Length: 208
Image (cartoon, rainbow, N blue to C red; front, side):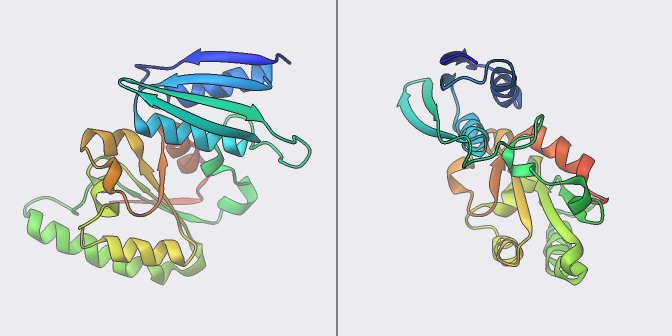
């Protein structure tokens, strides 16, 4: 165990910052950390990870730099998330093995007509509740992240699913690419580590 660890994660593609933090936590178990990142998605992912591991996190921003400072809280009162996963996917295999994950990588279904594809996506989301308690998680990647953003007609349907207890993960790298991070209105901003772990844990995956 060390008292302090500093990490420069600027320029690292997803899920690099989260993986660097996990490595430092497992190797050094530091009392405090300072992590430098350079985009808001990395800030959210690292903060969520460290919070789940029992740290309090504060942030300072400057042009091209976000400095995260983390301090370990009462370890006995805050159990760590399972090794190798971020807190958004901290779930036992027994819990997820009979569950369904919807993997959505576009804001429309199929090819031929974007207008028709958009209508099909709305119908798909409106029908997902028919899966009942088996529906565990929705993962939004690439153009699929647009569904979770302000102004999209699918937002209300995703909000209803989230309110019913369905977990929604929204790719932070994708939100950054489309310049939509500030417009996300539902779900947790996530990283590729969470996505891959979720796919591995799910009993069944429905991909659009």
